[in-house]
Length: 162
Image (cartoon, rainbow, N blue to C red; front, side, top):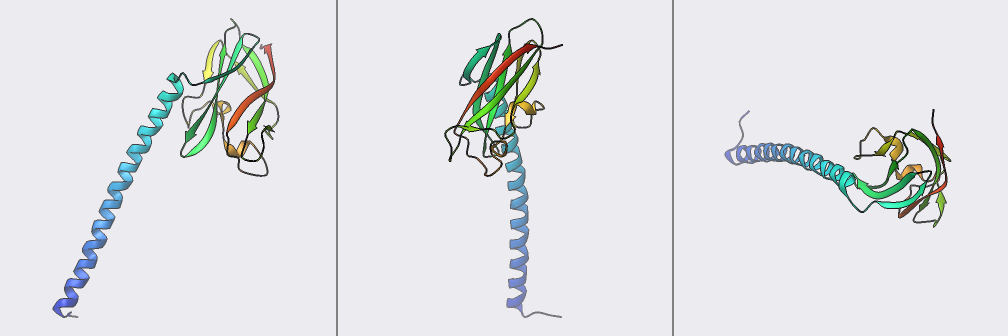
């Protein structure tokens, strides 16, 4: 089948446009992934080094800190603990949030517990293995996705761990 000359140019132009869009989207995707990795590395550095951690309290020679930060555009609460004892301890606590609907929303998952070795325990980024040190918006309420504006610890207990 032969096309009139003007129709052939039109089809070739469309094919060229599709090729350019495909190649530029592949380039954009690669650039986006590199930027995402860079921002995750920046976040990890921020979490490890930032002096803006909020020191909530000290109980049983353990310091309790939190930091509200972003991960993939979502607000998360990062927890950090500093066990200044010379042995492992078990800490228990409840979480209290300030959300778009409530000024004092207790986390619906109830009491949390963690065994802490001597020294510091914290999350180092969005995808850290210390998942107990990262609280996402879906862990705040069973009835709505919370916009986290504040955080505090409640009913803290520290005991020696075996």
